Image (cartoon, rainbow, N blue to C red):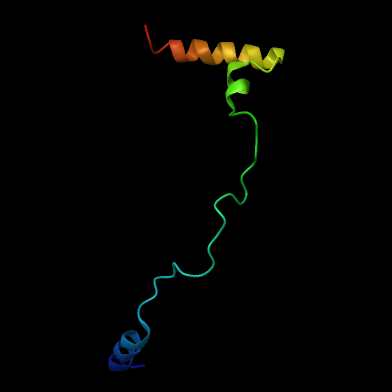
Length: 66
């Protein structure tokens, strides 16, 4: 193809930068977990290890507020 042919092709079809194609599901590949829910973060659901983790999280958060 010559430069004129390329130019004519672009005028007729437009320019593609490779961003087209299939749209992907934003939730694809994500793991659903309860770990980020409020009760688990605060240790309120009754598990001893969760309460201990919540205690450590609270201590870590309070380190910034001396």
